[in-house]
Length: 225
Image 1 (cartoon, rainbow, N blue to C red):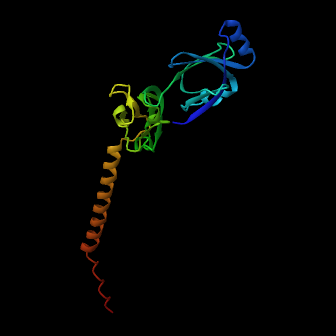
Image 2: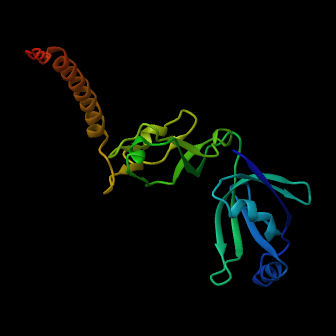
Image 3: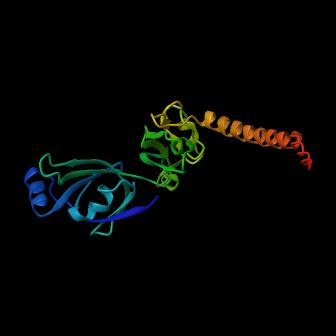
């Protein structure tokens, strides 16, 4: 999984007045949990743009002014109810040998046969919660829909991997191809194509037989003088 570095400074004070002063200065108060003790720090609001305002998921390297570097993942974020600006972020520290839980986006690839025949693709589950060590966390989970026909569904079992555990029931639907008014049933279409081919051959054979079996019209007798 790709990583983003956030440069920050440790917070000397964590009171309400200090927190308000940080926000007025364009900084975001943050906390890292999961280690021996919480780490309070702040960073410029702009530093979180590529972490928060994106559909992708990243791990984070928090680099502090004193040289401390902490590997973490985004755990919780609070926005202002009116301005929608970032108010506070919680991170969770991760370690190379410990599994971590994270929601990973699902990426659909391929051109479904059912969609080509007029069906509608519906993505039911856009993110999957998985558990894995940091080295095995994927950027996304790929779902190939090429062979899906109208009425088909793809379940969690289609994207199982030895590198991570998916924390959803096996019968969880990821996506499905639903019918629509303009949809053509796949099986009927195939049968009709086959029948049309057979009928075409039979028609050609019948036409050839009729041409061969037809008798030439008798020649007219010469007129007597």
